[in-house]
Image (cartoon, rainbow, N blue to C red; front, side, top):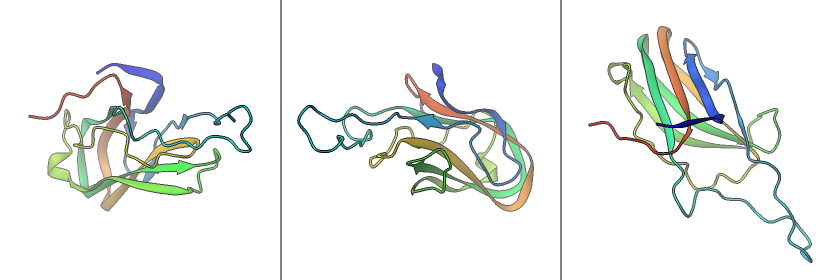
Length: 143
């Protein structure tokens, strides 16, 4: 996988409790077409698929499962304005180094300026576990 540093959401990020990704992506403000009354709308999901890689880089321990959501917001404050489920209740048995979550493209409805991931730990807090995630040139699937 080829990562661009500006599009990396997590880089060997330790996930021991519920947390947001270390980084967020700024998709920039949309422009206004000459003569139009308002800025053009954004939805980067349709069209050519945009590869998204979420990979476990260190085995997880002691949690029950992990939820991963894509949070979207119009400001950097991340209230958030919208949430898209990426992977829900991934069991700890699957969260081993090298495991790539099966969600491999940016979903439809990514229509706000800022995007980040949120990792929700289910059960006990994790005593170990790391993830690297972001937009990549391509994703090789598990198997």
